[in-house]
Length: 506
Image 1 (cartoon, rainbow, N blue to C red):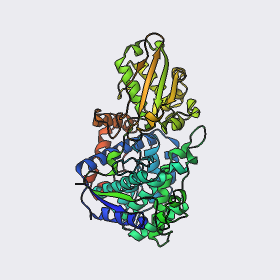
Image 2 (image 1 turned 60 degrees about the horizontal axis):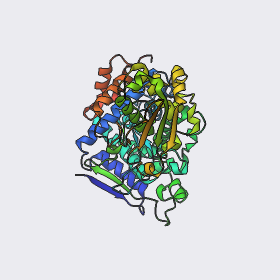
Image 3 (image 1 turned 30 degrees about the vertical axis):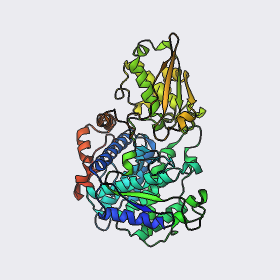
Image 4 (image 1 turned 45 degrees about the horizontal axis):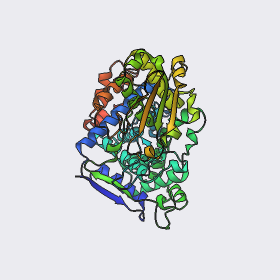
């Protein structure tokens, strides 16, 4: 049965979060359900393939941060050592965290959430991503914990950041969503290292009072490395804040009710003794936030998943489009806000960096259509977008650029907006030079979406894991075996979990 604890808005929620994390790690609550453990394992395994491939492809931010981490050797007093992917060298834990979270996040291809819980009336709709699992691994390595404790740490991270996303929209105030992940990371990391609720409260005060990431990191006509590294940099500061708090540095107390901190400052609660929200957290059963999170089945901004599925539906139902693509005169996509504003704005019509291209609806759809034409197929697995679809050759491909010109994106209006974030309401219409227009159905829950009930998710995730992991290793099966069934790993296995070769990495 589901079980919960609620931190009311008129209480010290920072201290309550600390208590929650400590009790979860101590096993004071009921066990999470089997499907929760299985879903968390899926998300973690997916993140590992993303990370290994990003490092092997020598993407910039993961390489810069990994090389930086290796310049800070560190072994804890008890012999524990936090490590980077592909290394057995113990490094400062915040450096292992920033390097590994950066690698997980680099492709922007791991899990996501939309902050939507209508049963509780918590529909703030903040985004978030499963970028922070390396925090739990680093803590487990440092404190010499086993895989079950590492998995509980991951569960705490996803539960806290997922529920915060449901009750407070950071984006509405131009603050980046990684702040929720940083708060969650600090709580889990502190609890795993034996911190007290009061010490975690101080860490949260330091984090929220001193280190607020604004959405300027996502500004500009072409997105940069720091956008992809945002979660990693936030997690690094979370770990540092915990260390300082556990060493005796006191941060501002009761930060969620502090009228000068971001929560009350931007969303005044109307009373001096309140935060803007109640916060309900799962303590057992199957209703953890991770169960409402979504998978990305390739490299694309998740807001485009509905359009991808709609296009593939049309190509499957009308294979003649692939036999004679010149008959396609125009493609019209209807979509909801905020997707229309994020991935369909004019700046995204001419992407010159991967970070911009994977947030460009017209580039994503044009690339899929080009691949479908060239390969004469319309399958999700066969057309799954991979790193090579965003390299310099792909970004300037003549056919892709030609197809981008015929794609038109329209805001679907209230009928679409009201269906988000329950689903990803999108439709695609193809206007041919002859014959009637071809229209897809309205897509709400594409493959990868938490409420999709038709796709073979495990099959798609296995294909994705192999497609990405083989970029970094010849032993894909061995890599999978190393990380799957995390809850069964021993202390020794967690200590060595990152000690595996990555192609091209010394």
